[in-house]
Amino acid sequence: MLNTALQTVERFHEAWAKEKRNLPQRRHVTERIDAHLKTLRV
Image 1 (spheres, rainbow, N blue to C red):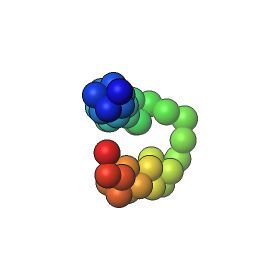
Image 2 (cartoon, rainbow, N blue to C red):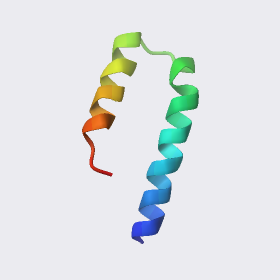
Image 3 (cartoon, one colour):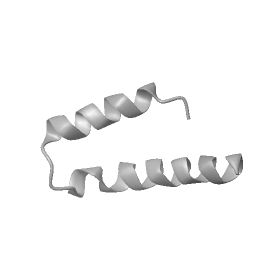
Image 4 (cartoon, helix red, strand yellow):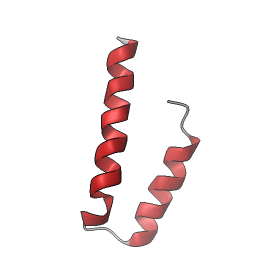
């Protein structure tokens, strides 16, 4: 189960890196999400 969780996190980070600029949100929201992701342990 841990392996599945790690794979899910990895896939999320890949998708986020590719698509975050295409989402209909303000730049500061994307920057805040990026900053928050850096604080997560996974």
